[in-house]
Length: 417
Image 1 (cartoon, one colour):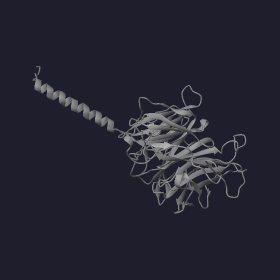
Image 2 (cartoon, one colour; image 1 turned 90 degrees about the horizontal axis):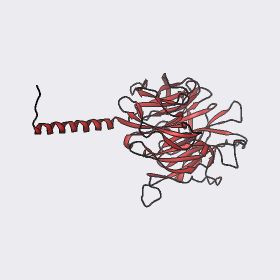
Image 3 (tube, helix red, strand yellow; image 1 turned 30 degrees about the vertical axis):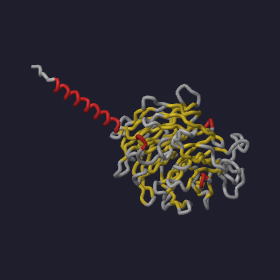
Image 4 (tube, helix red, strand yellow; image 1 turned 30 degrees about the horizontal axis):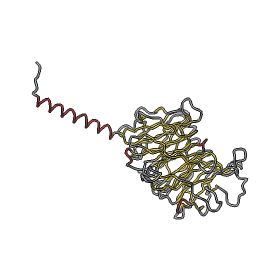
């Protein structure tokens, strides 16, 4: 028997169906909790020109899915590091072979729009960090003619102050403007060299990573002295003044094992953690009122073989360290800064970078260099353990090297380098 409907009944059904579709679409939209930007050092079919894979993150499963227009060109050759502005509207990408920082404006849908390119003062930039006021970039060597790969010398850090943009009457229509580097009046150049106290220039200080505290008051650079054997690791600390001017901290540099490889700080500006690639551990420090670092009780803490990246959860008392040789990420609980291992979890081959979702602090991602993919994990807020996200790992372009995250539509928590 066929049921018959009056025209008014049909209209009611159409309206109900439309409402259902609208509700479904709205629900689907809200399932995207974050965007993850993965820098890949080699694009398909190109020589050293990099690409940026953009993933949207499902809030229920943590599943990563590339947005339809991904990947995007990195704007240069061999991208090695990324950072996001504090307002989540700009992505800064370091292209090592071009000595450049490329500023991208981030659309509400995660799309990237190249906006500005600036040169770093030195040679072979390798690490970057950002906060509300400044972008900090570390160069492997100071500028020519002082240094070169044939005649290496200590690395350096440069600061690019950020100014407010967005004005149609200004040349900068992005939310922030990345201009010229601040000047180090001590040397009359746009960089601060990494020098040992009392040491001559024959010491080759090789930088590896940079971190700025959430407060913006202090910035730290990990490095090691390659001119001695075995090498000696350090953390160079600076206070950040007006206009991005840096002043070396009393007691800097601070001892940091043999070959530090990565650095992170907690959201309260209380603790700093440094991985030692050569020794297979992670060193913990307390931050004093003047920015000086003091080793935590029990430090260093055991990690896997050749640790490469460290992150501190912005919402919960957990830290995570990737190990290059073991192909793992180790989870730690934090109590008064002291790290206690929770367990280790398998990643893809050669994890080199890591990020935590900023909206909920519920998902963690590792960039796996040799596997050409990203491993996704669901993070337990109750015990810090990790569970593989749905359909993990996720394919990227060749040689992923960096991870940056933002909340969907620019709202939420923090960002990891």
